[in-house]
Image (cartoon, rainbow, N blue to C red; front, top):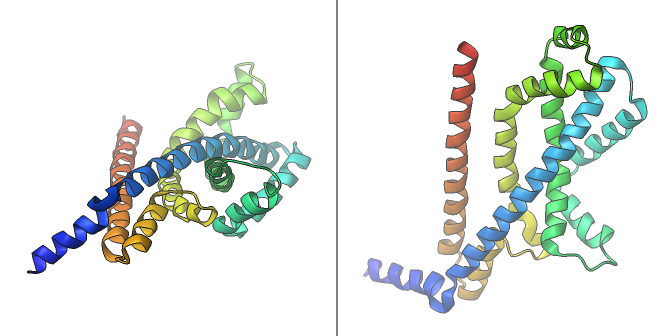
Length: 232
């Protein structure tokens, strides 16, 4: 009897009226937001990290460093959901903008602040002798940073950057606050249609868990490979 009741609830929750499509379409939007937000966060984060590290090492770029510190303080000191709401309902209040674009911008700007500090720590961990080696080879500061320091820093912080990708994936679950039909919103839509919260919300949790476990597996393999290369 219990099995038949579960089967009936499963049918009403996912099969009837093709409600499973809320989850698949939501997953597509979640992955789309995550990928493009990661790209934006990586590019902007690396630029901010270079500015901050250059100021720490040489004392130059003082003005840019000042604005970078303000940016990091504001972004890291406020909740991402508040940033999302401000971008969509305040900054773009008078402009018709795609909700996915607004979400990508919000999560990308948020991620950039954390990427910047991760990369900056990687740059600062590179021995100063590398800059001296670059100078001995006739390279100026910029070329030394690009060709010698950044590759080493990137290798050191790659696992941390991969973990930031995982964190960002989970943070996108609040995109529904601006009516983005992401994975979490899809599960909640099924719940509101069926008045059955257990199955759709558990399904959303399981999907997130599976994706995170897959990503964690690849991050672990990456860390082991980097550790093996360091031993050679």
